[in-house]
Amino acid sequence: MKNEIKNKYYWEWVLYEFIRDNNLYRETQERFEIYENGRSSIKSRTVIESSAEFSYKESSDKIIILGYKTGNIYSKRMESLDIELQGLLALPIESKEILPDVVKYTFLKSKPLRKQVSTSLPEQDDSLLIDIYGNFVINLRNNFSMLVSGSSGAGKSYFTYFYLTRFISQVIKNDKNNDNIRHAQLFAIDPKRSDLYKMFRQSGMPEENFGTTNAEAFKIVRNYLNELERRMSIYDESPAFDSVGIDIGLEPTLLVLEEYSSLVASMDSKQKKEFENMVAIIAQKARSLSMGILIVMQQPRADSLSSNIREQMINSVFLGNPSKESAGMMFGTTDLPEVTGKGVGLYSIERGTPKEFESPQFQGNVFEIILPVWKKVALNYHEQIKN
Image (tube, rainbow, N blue to C red; front, side, top):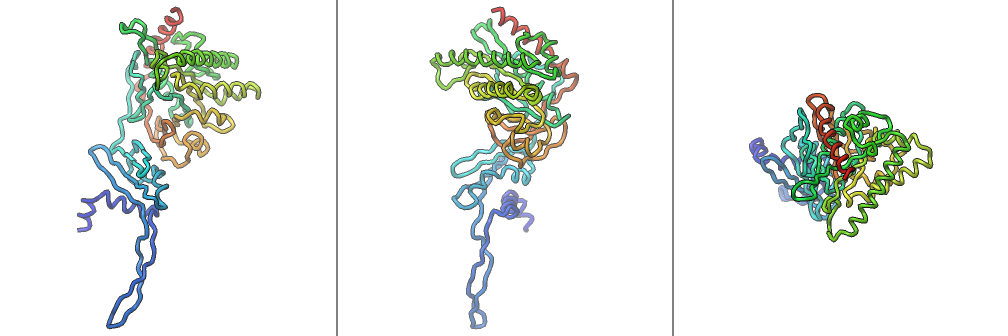
């Protein structure tokens, strides 16, 4: 009979056990009087004085756990049960919504399918969305600045190549006849002349869009700041409210700082301070102007990424398992699920709950797949320069 009841009300039993195992209740001793054989005696028994309160909703593809904030000592803990509930359910978390009286945790009953990239990626896409994995979607109308890091060999570079290829394929159209199509703009500084630098060169990107030396880095960042100021003037004159640069015809624009720690390490203290100040200004003001920064680096540390920049990087991706210092810097917590496998990592959008994801997997030579997109975009860049 007990097994039949438990099977019928499975999630109730799971949540009862969760309350017990996580000490989300308080016991007390209650005294009471009983009569036996004409005599009275005082006995005591253990009762529940207070307890956390949960309920759930279940559909074919999701389970929603509701943790109630009733004003007791458990209310605050309701907001930080992500890892514990993931461990309990063994399901990927989709979202956490903190409301005044309840915290809503939504879990997926099955993992999203990992993207398989076997042929050339789209050369043109006007969705302004970069779909990576499940609900991990970057909307270019939002803040798309991002900090990307990862363990050696975990797939950080391939993730970056996929993301940048999908970014530059995004287009905006400035007339109804589609005669003026402009691709998202990409600039990059690659101090180690890695494959990213080679992609810019072999695809024929304009030389002013990429560089490797400190002098080129300063030139590109200063030009990026000038573009930011130009867009700010356009934005200020626009009559549109609650809008971003894309909405007034400005294409999404991204500055990539590859191997950031190596870049700033090669500068003297005066150069480093000036460079970091410029990057911080861009990070602070870029969002409304549809501009952003992508910082790619090995395990980030406080001495290689200043706090005034880090605080602006509200989107974070880590391939593999971060160290405690990296976890704290990127996600604001060290209590993270452990991931396994190449191309598997954690992401957080707008400082939301860190979630596991699987990076798109290339079936074939990565550069043969993405190079056609880069060459197409490079032609568009040169056309825009002529016009």
